[in-house]
Every structure is written in structure tokens, then in C-alpha cells.
Image (tube, rainbow, N blue to C red; front, side):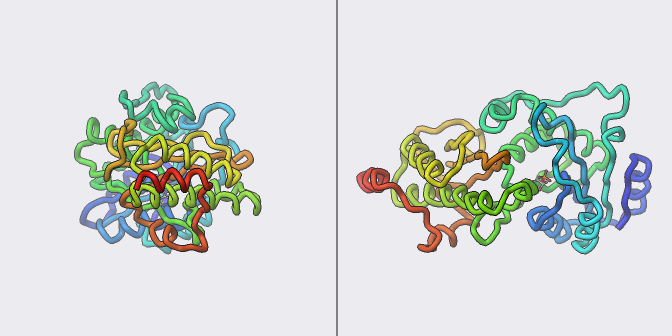
Length: 309
Ligand code: AMP
């Protein structure tokens, strides 16, 4: 695997690439099996795979965890090389944002103002779009891979790419989860043992909402209320739990096949996000049917759910 740190080194590495399509996997490092699934998928679908590691300062709001975000480039590089990655692009902030860099890319749509856009502020997705646009311009990939764990980011990047980089195909990869259903995330490293145990309430809540939707609870407000109650009982401090249309991220009056539950919760100082399709809950369906793992619904919730069947 070639490691490139400057735009010149990147150009040379890309010039020496094998034939076939160029696949790109942008990351912020501290890699886990979720990131590696993106690389593995890219390796199966393209001739050259390039990953980037860049903790992007412009997508962190003041007071967020930019400074303490986990950084482990040596271990990451070894994992990427083992995973079949051909080129690692690991630039410094000065390479991505040289002196005089003045551009911000933002998607003006309801996609960016809700959920994490509301919670982290309007600068968050502008920071994401700017760095992804900058990286797409440098790498010129044919295909780029993003994880469904960050569903809203995926939707916003798709919109940006369709406007500015129509030749880049954005592909999504399902969320990789731990045995207890918790989505893998670099930020899980911040959790204490007790917090990590409580984090299982996130997928449990999502799985329970999906179960209720499958047995006929189709009122989004009812489901949101049940979910918020379950999350609180599970010891989560919720930033949001909302059900929205997975394409437009708009609110819905009735659950349908596009309905997706989105959650952002704090455990101590750590903010975690997750999401699940309510009627097509791939990845958590085994978990959902396991009685051992099933979230216990409050009696009032159970009663209301039954009357809607
Ligand atoms: P990050 O390093 O957190 O910016 O993530 C880089 C890419 O990996 C993004 O496209 C994420 O959506 C994706 N990703 C992160 N965690 C997971 C996961 N558990 N499963 C699948 N993809 C993930």
C-alpha cells in the first residue's frame, strides 16, 4: 500500500494505479470493522481502492471532540493494508485547507437542517460537504463508499455529489454492529464499561420500534413517544429520537416502507447516533427476534400497541 500525504504524492500514487475503476473510502481514522467493511466492499467492486484518513476540523463545532478524537494512524495503516487497500491518503489540515482556501460547500435543503444538522448546528454538514468535495476533487474516484450508520451524512453527500460530481457514484454499506447490536463507532472508545453496556439501549430501542411497526403500530408520534420512553428507561440522554422518511428526511403522518427511526444519544460526554428502517430492519432483525435481547416495553406502551394491531 502506498501512503500519500501531499497532493503531489497522491497524484503520483494515482498515476501508478492499476487499471479498472477507482474506489474511494473517506474516513476519520481510528478504524474498526465498520470502516473495513467499506474497504472490503470497495475491493470487491473496483480495480484500485484508496482510503483517506483525515480528522476534518471544519465539521466539528466549538466545544466538540476534535482535539480528543482518537488518532491511531499506524494501526489504521496496517489494517488498511491487510484489508487490500492500495493507497492511503493521510493529509494534514494544511494540505486540505491551504492558506487562502476560501470555499465552503453546503447543501441547501431540508436534509441538512434536521436531526444532526439541528443538533450539531448548520456548520456540521457544510464541513462534511466541503471536505468530501475537496477529497473528490483530489482523488477523482469512480465510486465512493459511505456507511449507513451515518444515514443523514449519506443523504447529504449523495445530494452534493449529484450536483457537483455526477461522475462519482455514491454507494452505501449497511451498518456493522457489535454482538449486542451496538453500531461500531470510533467514539465507542470513549465509553466506560458501564456506558458501553447502556449503549445497547440504542439498538434495543430501534429494534423494539421496528417490532411494533411490524405488528401494526403505524402512528409515528406514538412510536416516537414509546421510543423516547424506552431510551430514557435504558439510561440514555436523548438528543433526538425521530421517525422520518429515509429519502427526504421529512416527517411522516403514517409509517410506510420508507420510514426510518433516527436516534442521537449521549452517554456521559459521548454522543452516539444510529438509525434503523422500521419495516425493513436489515442487520437488527436477528437481534429483534431474540427474546434475550428484546427491550422490555413499558406496560402502557404494550397496551397501546395492542389496540393498534
Ligand atoms: P468516520 O471515520 O466515522 O467518519 O466514518 C467513515 C465512514 O465509515 C463513513 O462513511 C461512516 O458512515 C462509515 N462507518 C462508520 N461506522 C460504521 C459502521 N459501524 N458500519 C458501517 N459503516 C460505518
